[in-house]
Length: 148
Image (cartoon, rainbow, N blue to C red):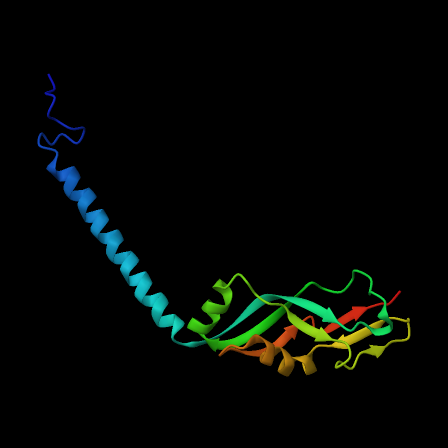
């Protein structure tokens, strides 16, 4: 006959099972604590990351609007301390970087389309970003568009 006090483990007092549960909780607590310290340590180092950032266009040539083939977001490759990059990623109210066609040297190709090379825009984007992070490159490296 089995008494009511006995558990499935066969231990009548049940203390062995609670001791295992307590040890698991202590282990998980210290595992979480070590992860937090590791993450804070990694944020103090300089890292490279990619951030999708919104883009706006001003002074489109000819007063016409380009077809909807202009990208609404650009991939900015950033270099900086982890804390700065984390702050940029966590701020949800990002003001878009602005590409002003009156200040940009856009070019015309043989097929009648226009394009902008994004490498010369990096200094302008760094000024607009106002962060400790520096933009090292922009993807796509060329923005193609056509005017109506």
